[in-house]
Length: 146
Image (cartoon, rainbow, N blue to C red; front, side, top):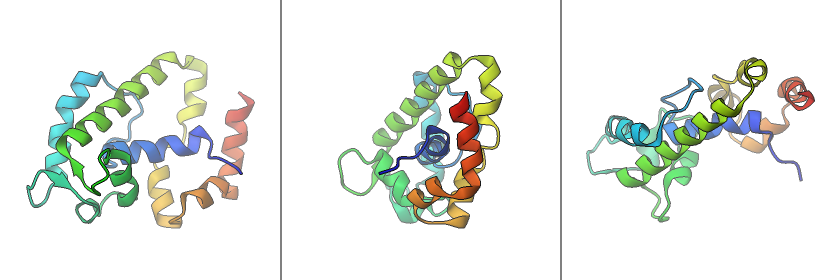
C-alpha cells in the first residue's frame, strides 16, 4: 500500500484544519490561534447554533474531511471547542515545522503547494488518487532527493 507524501498531505490537512481560510505556511502560537479560531468559526456557523456541519462548509474543498478532522466526539458536527483545539493545534505544529526547516530547503518544500487543496477539489474526489497522480510525481521526487 502506498501512502501520501507529506508534501501532498500537508496542504489538504491545512485546508481541513483551517477550513481553507489560511494558505500562508507560517504557523502561529497555540494561544493566538485559539483566539483567532472564534472569528473563523462564526464565519461558517450560518445558523448560529454553535456547531458546524458539512452543509455549512460548502466553500471548503473537502467538507467531510474537515468535519472528520475536527469532530473528536463522533457526532458528525464540529463544536466551537473542537474547532478551536484543532485549528490551534495545526498552527502550533506548523510553526514548529517552519522554525525547524533549514532555510535552503524552505523554497523547495513550499513552492506550488498553496493551491493544492483547490486542485484536489477541482480534479478528483478521492484523495488517494491525487497522491498517485502523475503530475505530482516530479515534485515528490524533488522533495525526496533533498
